[in-house]
Structure formats: structure tokens, C-alpha cells
Length: 157
Image (cartoon, rainbow, N blue to C red; front, top):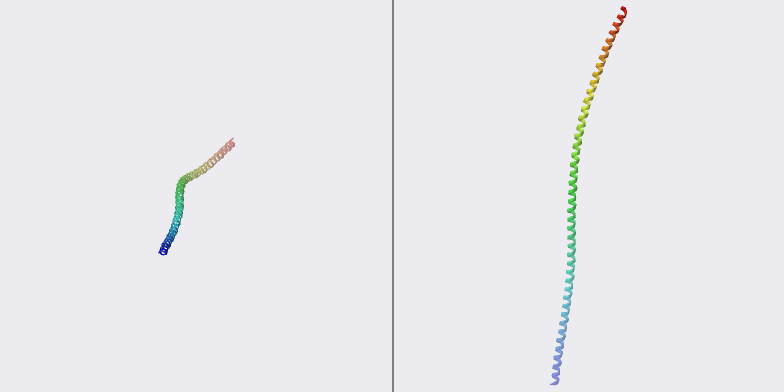
């Protein structure tokens, strides 16, 4: 009997040891699973940090793009202002050219008037020359006649 009880107790103890070894194995397995879950959580944390970094980078790019768009808008506004200024200058230049054309037309009219005056003066000078020539010829005739009269008078005496 006692040997059988001892053998039974040994068998129970061996069974308990086997169960404890199994529990230890399960605990070790659970520890491994927990370590794996921890590694996955750490990996997820790293992924989340990476996604956060990507989002921050995208935000920075968006801010940069918005700044570029604002800059382009400013450049477009500046170009529009320059174009408006150039248009105003062109309009002013056109007005100046029109004024110069009017002055040139006026100068041409004055030149034509001066030419007409010169032609008139030439005609007057030609007329005066003809009149003086006629007067001189008449005086010459008068002088010759007086000379003849004087000569004839001088012979009578």
C-alpha cells in the first residue's frame, strides 16, 4: 500500500510538475505574444510618428505652395500694374506724337505761308524794279528833252 500511495503521489507530483511546466510554457508563450504585441505597438508608434512626420512635411509643402501662390499673385499684380503704367505711358506718347504731328502741320503751313510771302516779295521787288526802270527811262527821256531844249535855247542866243 504505502509504496503504491507514494507511487501515486509521485505520479500526481509528476503530473503537477508537467502541468506547471505546461503553464510555464503557456506563460512563456504569452510572454512571447506580449513581446510581439509590444513590438507591433512599437512598430505602430513608429509608423504613427512617420505618418506625423509625413503630415508635417505635407503641411510645410502646402504652406510653401500657398506662399508661392501668394507670391505669384503678387507678381501678377505687379505685372498688371506695370502693364497699366506702360499703357498710360503709351497713351501719353501717342498724345505727344499727335501734338508733334499738329506742330509739324502748323510749321508746314507757316512754311507755305512764308513761301507765299517770299513769292509776293519777289513779285513786289520785280514790280519795283520795273517801276524804277520805267521812272529812270522817263527821267532819261525828260533829261534828254531838257538837254535838247537847253541846247536849242543856247543856239538862239
